[in-house]
Length: 287
Image (cartoon, rainbow, N blue to C red):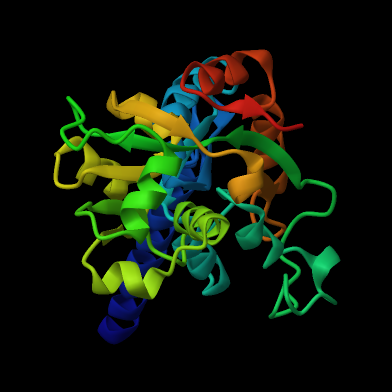
């Protein structure tokens, strides 16, 4: 009899604990962590070219008034690095690159073009890709312009001759470096000869090149107009489309991401309010 009583007491205790835990679990589920003030919160992962750091950070503050339920987490880096991360499976909702090359590599409409989309990837939300912004490639100098660099024409003469000059440029796998290589081709300059003469130094993205110029570690650097503006650098010349083509920043929503919210943000980036921020540092609309 005693054993039966103990058995029933154990069952009653177990039932009581189960009901208690269920009640606690129910109270936690009633207020999900993704909700604040009864409104579902969304975190958007934005992968953007390093040259957009200042403008997108400012626009994120403005967007809080438009969509307070949305928070943005930015990944600013060279477009080539961002492309690699996306291809390797990094979470990304919206991608903005500093050149079409990196966006092409994810565009399913170009899957049959082995040159533009070598892996045949189809990762962009259909119909979301746009040309968002245009930038300019410029020749910037440190404060006071100690080397007296005044133009691309003059620089080309120094780089191709026996004169001493040190130019900072982006690596060949990032857009600003690729535009620089086109400028070298325009002037018939040999990268190998310039490297052998110790006339070139590199940065992994446009921010690193800008820093070298700002710190006076080089005589000049080839960077975007927007980065020169943000760093307060003197621009002595601008590259023409004949020299390096147009500097177009495409943007697109990733189909594996939060497509509805990301598209809404991309729409906002085309608004007058957002464009005012972009234009204040030297961008211009490309759509």
